[in-house]
Each structure stands twice: as C-alpha cells, then as structure tokens.
Length: 202
Image 1 (cartoon, rainbow, N blue to C red):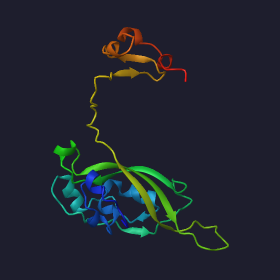
Image 2 (image 1 turned 45 degrees about the vertical axis):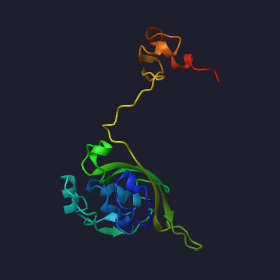
Image 3 (image 1 turned 60 degrees about the vertical axis):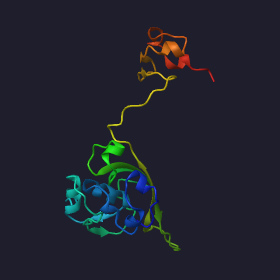
Image 4 (image 1 turned 120 degrees about the horizontal axis):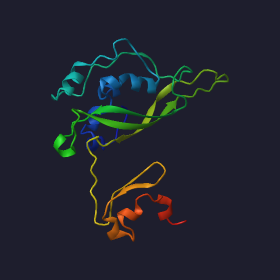
C-alpha cells in the first residue's frame, strides 16, 4: 500500500499507519491471493495457495500481527494478451482482515470481511515510436467498499413502510395487510397486480 485512507479503521478496524508500506497480500485471505494476483497482472510462485502461519492463526480466532509471509511474486505487474481480464478497469471482491468486534458489527466470520474493490490500473507510458507491447503497470488505484455480512438481513420498518414481494414480471406476489393503512388498496386487491399499473405515468 502506498496510501490508504484513515477510514480503514472504521470499516476494518485496521491501522492506516501499519498498512502503509506493507504488502496487500498481508491483509487478504490466503485463498484470495491468486484472484488478487490475476487482477493485478502478477505471477505467483508455486505454493501460493498455502496459508501463512499468521493467516491460519487468524482464522482460528487468535490475535496475530498484520505481517504475514507474502506469496512469492514471480513477475512484475503487466497487461498480457493472455489475461482473462481486458482493459484497465477492475471490479472484484476479496476477503480482507478485520479486527472489528463481532458484538459491535454482528459479524459471524472470523477475522475477515468481504470488500468490493473498484479499481483502475495505472500504466507507465513511455515516449516511444513503437508501442506494440503493453506498457508496464505502476500500480492500481482502488475504491474499497466493505460489504455487509450475509447475516444482516433485517431492515427496520418505519410506520409508513410495508413489505411486498414482486415476481420477475413485476407482478405483486405478496403484500402485507398494513398496505391498507397507507394506500387505497387492500392486500388482496393489490396481489396479482402489475407494479407499473400503480406507478404514475411520468
């Protein structure tokens, strides 16, 4: 990491100072190392799928330091024609270490949180007349979005809200009886109607 914002402490409970200058592989689940390397255009040596000692200890719920045994990188970042990913834009999910308490965040996963990375690779352009080969990459700029855990499936309903279930053809399959208090329809009347018939024409 050359730079990481201070908000990493809010969403992952990690230190900006400790992460700056360390390898991204230190904070990513060992099973996601190959995914990250492929997105970055890196090559990993054999054995990159093995868990480092601190990664394994973290999965067991023990407190460990952030430093792990990095997978050996066998090549520099590059855009190759054989890569499954084209262009400079990337969007993928990885599991990153998190030290947030389960009580405060209602996490069931031990030590990791799923993060969506919206990225753009930064090529290093050279002033050359022949640009047949892909330019080398300097790095990647990413916007990380910490996704909510799967266990968070309850939404607080206010007094002016009701729950309805809609089919793929936008027909209402189910509606709560409280809809009668908010609209001029009963749950029985609204069930089976197309959602578009209830919306304003504009």
